[in-house]
Structure formats: C-alpha cells, structure tokens
Length: 97
Image 1 (cartoon, rainbow, N blue to C red):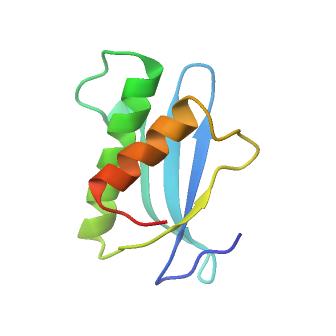
Image 2 (image 1 turned 135 degrees about the vertical axis):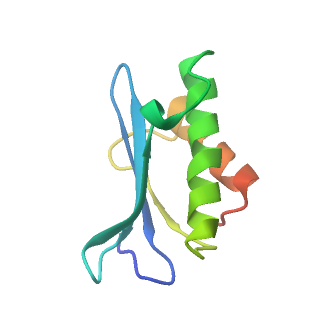
Image 3 (image 1 turned 90 degrees about the horizontal axis):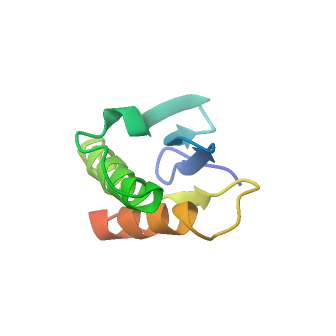
C-alpha cells in the first residue's frame, strides 16, 4: 500500500487497550493527521464504540485537511471487531476508500 497527497494511506494500530490511526503521505514521508483514543471526549462504551467514534473523528479532521479519499491499511489486523467498527465510522464521517 502506498499513500499520496491526493489519496493518503489510513493506517490503524490497535492494542488490547487502545486504538489509534494516522493519515500518511508516503511520497513526502509525513503524517497528515493522527488520532488516538485519548483524544475522544467520551471514553465510555465498548471498545468497538470508541473505535467507531475515533473513525468519525479522523474523518472530520481529514476533511479539514481537504482529504476526501484514502487507502485503508489495516496492517496485519483482520477486518473484524474494532477495525471494522473504525472503518464504518470513517465512512459515516464522509471519507471514501
């Protein structure tokens, strides 16, 4: 996977406790936007609920940075559970991939 300025790579990282994501422009080797669960105002709910809210937050920040479409890089994580909830939140927030 390779992200550009027009279509950056949306990379996710999850641990047993936390979830984070970044929009990366691989051509310039910079992070455009990065979010983690610590940035959420409401930290209650299940891990999947928090991942979905985080997806909506990164979509909002991406639109402020004038990004409309991304390449989704889930890494070694299966498209299941928190990763799937995060992707649904990103889509609900208005980003396309």
